[in-house]
Length: 135
Image 1 (tube, one colour):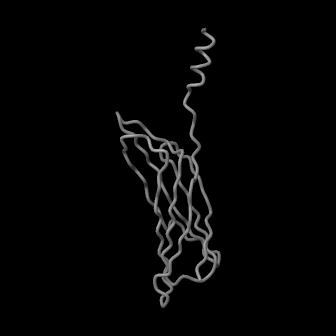
Image 2 (cartoon, one colour):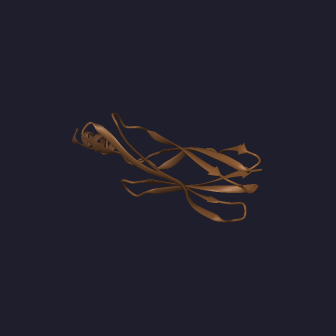
Image 3 (spheres, rainbow, N blue to C red):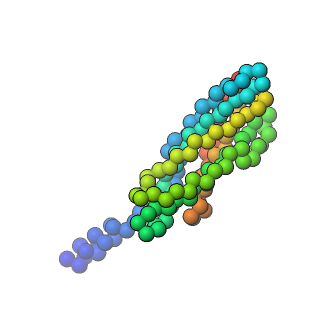
């Protein structure tokens, strides 16, 4: 009986969630063909971040940042940076950030959005390169 209780308790331990991307897509949209202005939209969804308890609430702090690599190979750091800090009544399985980047006089070719998401509570980082084309 004691063995059964110990097995049950061992199985009840909290399992660490894997911090990962669940979705990233790029939607480039030409705003003005005369000036070569583009709006780049990237919905980013991640799961497995830490949540801290504050009484009956759950607090998250997840930083989203994007560096851009142009078709000519130039690295443009921090074209987007925003902290998703929220207090919720219940634990959330994932969080979403709608990344929006405006490109002025954009050169045609393939770009790379280097997406970095940082869990501010434990400093875990995940990164993903997302390629897209501007014509």
